[in-house]
Amino acid sequence: MKNLRNILVTAFATALIVLIHSCASNADDYLKFTEGGAISYTGKIDSLKIFSGRDRIKIEGLIISDPKVSQLRVYWNAKKDSVVIPINRTSGIDEVSSVIESLPENIYNFDVKTFDAKGNGSVSQYITAQTYGTRYQASLTDRKIVSSSLSSDLSLTINFASMDLTTGAFATEIVYTDGSNLEHTVTVPVDQTQLVIPNYKIGTQFSQRSLFLPTLTAIDTFYTEFVSKYPQVIDLSYMIKNNTRPFLTSSTDGGRWGILADWTTNAACKNHNGYGGWDGGCCGNPPGTINLESGWGAPNITNGKIYQTVTLEPGTYVFKTDLLAGGSGLNSGWSTSDYVYITATSGTSLADSEGGALETNAATLGFKKIVNTMSPDAAEFTFVVNQTQQVSLGISLTQGQERYGHFLSVRLYKKNN
Image 1: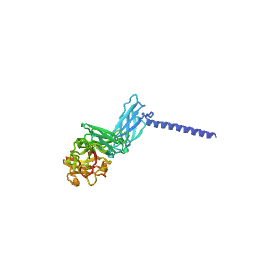
Image 2: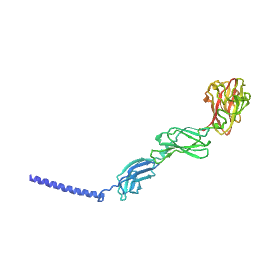
Image 3: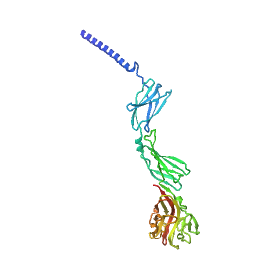
Image 4: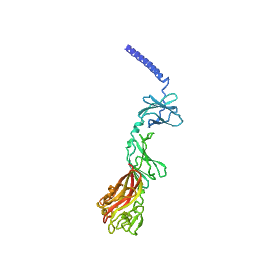
């Protein structure tokens, strides 16, 4: 029994000696890595953020607690690439902000560490960011315009289509010239669908491009190329003088009938004792209209013409009149046996209407026959001018007994696309 106790004591002593020797050996190994001292870590960057850009990123953060920090290192591509960002510490909180260039469009995993002057580093922080470049740029399309029209008061109205917001679209820029030859740039937010520009210079184009941010916090804005375009529709009604009711007169008979100011009225239309074409109002009809009435004591009208002559440049045009729709208008007006037209004719007069001759006349650029069964909104036609020339616009008619119909306005538009 005594021998067993001696054996156990000897074994315990031996194990204790081995353990002590092992600990001493491990301590020596630790010193190999710490060069005889404890590991020293610098304070890591706080509030670390990375922002995407065009083939680059921006890194931001705060140095708060460690006064020894002297630089920030950013690694990527498995630490094959890196940049060093110097840090000048003050007694307070220091902001770090730096842009890293030459990062072709891709997704990057960054390893971010601070260091002091002795080369002691912080614990790594890992953050991922994407850069954008030619592929993203190629995917962008300009915002579509639903319509653009220039009114006779020279205000340009542009109506925009909606956009896919997932593309990063946030605005459209419009560059235009005003009536004083001053250039302006207007930024239209993506949620705004209409822009009205006053004092637009007629005959000029406006330019458009759209703006994109691939992420809400991106540091670079992407743009589509500027595209120049004319307003799709230009209201040229101002070229036609005295073009809406109440129409003005150059003279009247002192009563209902008169002659239109600024218009050429031929003798056939002056079928009310030397007056005609202007109606001062009768029988519940509105005053100050264009009305060519035959019957009820007045002669029929054959090849009657009321028109104005303007000079038009090459282009596509729309000539339109607004007709009175009630019983005193189209419902009691011209039938298919009459030849009543709104028309455009090359030269300084209108083609004859009798028997429908106007429809085949080589000088006729366009026409619309007016009958009492048509919608008042249908009184328009489109015509093309191939070279700068004089064009006469107006009403050419041949009609029988008890015919009339009231014109409320006359309008001219140019279509660009």
